[in-house]
Image (cartoon, rainbow, N blue to C red):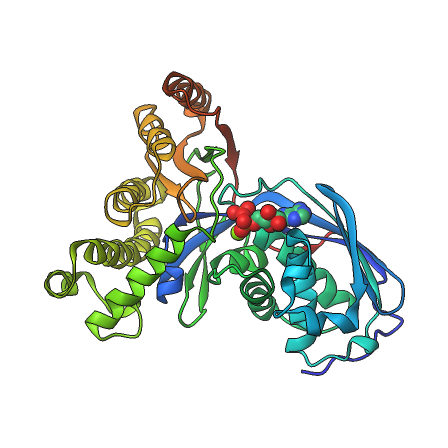
Length: 385
Ligand code: ADP
Ligand code: MG
């Protein structure tokens, strides 16, 4: 696609935003070409955009006050080869600008200079995808102001490309899809192979249910060896089974898988294969029996991540068991693991008691005090003003 020069009708200033997300179910399935079922949350990253100096992009964030500024024409030389020269947080929005121009074959000289100021209430590093929120806000804003005409599916891919190539984090497409395509009161059932996405009404509020997030404040890092090791185990398992990805393995194939591989690889494979099935079951259960009925699938997902995939932590396990004991219909860690947050699906009136039970349990265990709050399925990226 070729971009045109900004016409006088194109906005020259405005505010855009994109949300963080919670993954209801479907963990470590995205890079195995499988299924995920996230929803966008009300915590958002906002960007105030004004047109800037000709040919220059400038980014600032409320939590990194030093601006980063460079000529748009230099983006192409910086990413991906020389990305280390850019302050890490600025690689997210600058990476999106680079990916947008590159993907649309747009001459940097043909677009207006921009000044982007970010502010956010998405907790960082908690597994709620503040990274996709900043990418989504940037992508939505620049797509409009530069009049690039990309749709939300294309913008989600732009966000992933920025995160993979400009930041260097090997993430899948789930987070960006939720940030771009989320809807109020609904989840997004996403096939990570075809990128077909279906909006599935969740009906939590109507059923008197809340989603409680328990942020353990133990921060995760995608770049750590644990994440890479899990990806490699999945690739190894798929290769041993002779399939392109674990998506192509069904629960019925597991006995054969067990014979073909070592115990650790097998348990990694079993998590992914059963988790894909749980996502499918969750969508069907939700539609057939309503939101309460998905509770046991959340519990089973947590047990699988704890026992087979080995990515839970004592804090996440305590959050989950305490929430269940306090009456949650289901609970699981969410996000990549090794820290971050857990979620619990729980009756509205039980939230205060569950919150204090979890706070007490964490204090008794000598853990850092968790950050506990409810989230509500919300709309994806949009122009606000
Ligand atoms: P998560 O996506 O789970 O919050 P990541 O490690 O993927 O964690 O992304 C967090 C990183 O994204 C931050 O360390 C920072 O570099 C960048 N980031 C996210 N939101 C903002 C923001 N509002 N301003 C500046 N940088 C941000
Ligand atoms: Mg992230």
